[in-house]
Image (cartoon, rainbow, N blue to C red; front, side, top):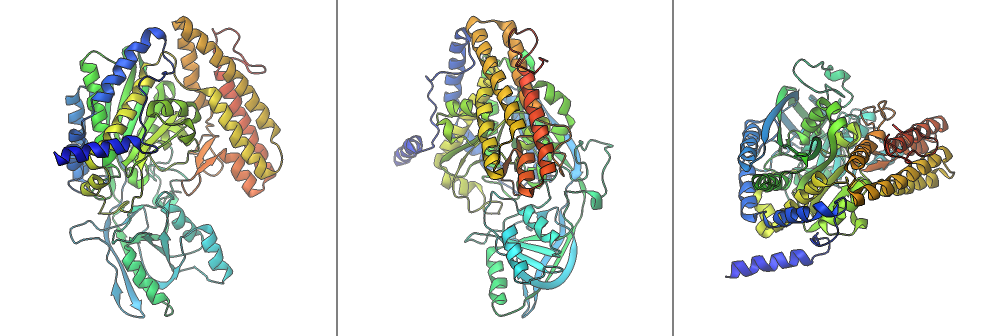
Length: 638
């Protein structure tokens, strides 16, 4: 009785919390004609009732039972488990797709103090835990003085230089203070300044060691040896020395307590460490699981939802909270199909691999299917570390922000439309040009990437797995709305308005207007307004032929914002509105922003020209032939 009451109290408090994401099932649903709205409401009522906290918790317990780093036997077993359960759930098909990628494991690693006294660091939390390592850090053996570089930001390195501290040949000790910035950027900065190695510790109170990748995937993600093309059998591979994403120096994660030993010794004077790393630099298989439910009306239009499966150790939050939710999503969709409620568009589910190394299997799969995705993808819906706290959090391209807000029952202003990178949505948005959404419940996450991120920890932060079930409802409902809508709910008027705010920010930083870009934005905004009016009319009248053309145009917009030449210095990133800064933080209008920061007028003019061309391509896409009166002034219809 007390257990039931306690669970009920937790559920009630969840629904009352700010940001708890409680959908209003009677609120209007955009994109549905009156004739199909009742069917969608019935589908969403069934979605709301279906998720089982008992099943989700059992799946989570199984997923986290053993370490399952990418490419390991346990990782393969979980891929097969996922595939088999998706088939049992009622998906039309499920398959494992293999890519062969650079996936180095450490043969050995050590950090020892040679002066002022002998001491060895501990590179695992407990004797039974795997050794902690940084993926793609270089092998080497160096004995050198250690320098503390604070949090490893550019400002910290500049302060050291101003004090006359030369980092060439030194070992740099860095405190990793923000789990959502990227540790690889610190390695990049240290390498630029000639350091021989980096030691990194988390800003945490426990003995956890924060593992992670340190490849330069802000330059190019995925397999570092196949940048921009898929690592299929027989694929051309770069030599490691020619791979722009591979660091040339060692990087090792250490426990916070071990870092304090080094810092205490530094207070007494110079400290010398010996750092040794030997990686095997092996090419290993990674396994993407793709499940499919064929659309009844538009089988060649795809709504894709994905989460990665690989973990640094047990992966309680990251990623198994998301993997358990994805499994319940598959069961929900399968049950709907078995009952006759097949979606109008095809839904693909993806269990990605090696996300923790460099968003690897999603990148390789996206590069492999680039042309097909450009033709068929409606949107990609991502969940990574699904539940680390109580606050609902979502990011989305502006065209989807309203849909996410209404589906989750939160204010549209809470949806973050400034998008960087750091998860599997990157290949879809930045390389292919597919609208994306990223969802989670978040909170303080002190066990990030450590051996203490376990089933028990997740059970304490989400008692009864209630938030997991709620995210399953939101994620599945979002996929259903996109898959079943008569008019795709991709709001380009909102997108144009948000681009305007991005452009105003850049103009303020520059101190002068950008007239070429502003004019192109005005043309896109006018085209979006006319297109929205025609879409509303076609939806109200039930004009199926017009809706076909309108939806096809809407699917072209995100693609129009990409440029095959990519950004200057990192051509893999093609989107002209979004890119990650080197820290994974969002950089909007990246070509303009970087040129303004560099105070390079020639580069700025080129970036503005390319942005204007992207906006005009988008305006042109909104004027498909066959819909009279939509062609914007000065832009031919496609």
